[in-house]
Image 1 (cartoon, one colour):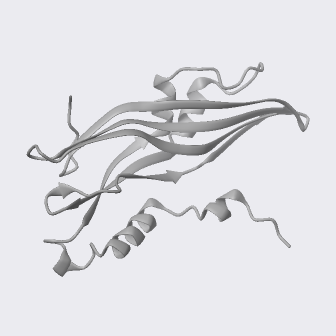
Image 2: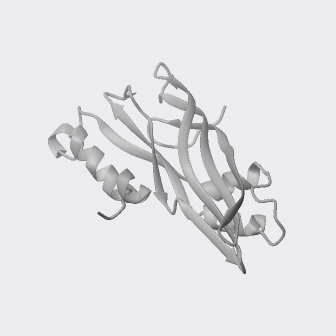
Length: 181
């Protein structure tokens, strides 16, 4: 039996397909329900490489490893979105959720050396919602990306590490417009 890859197991789909699925499940695609029912909206995209650039750290330690600019360029192929929901002119409970689109695995090779980065987790950290102001506002304290990195030489692992970096203080209002403190 063929081995199932992580991508197949996670059922990675495009952000558009995920949004359509969520919209159908919530009923927000039904034109008659739009005025009174829940309505999804998207805030983003955020490029993962930009987060990496503002949270400098050494992912690889061996000579000849990809430069930071190469890593940033590769990680920027991965975008993160916040999917939120408004209902009756307020933020709905149970949101936002995080959607990730793009490459989750990046690989570089040079001679007998191979370097890999896998985005293994993207999570929200802290949420403040104020439905008492007009328009209602929401602040996500941070979105954190967790990477697993490995260096191998001639198929022998030379080092593995877990790296985390994040974007902090994301604020927006009920219409999806970016806000400030």
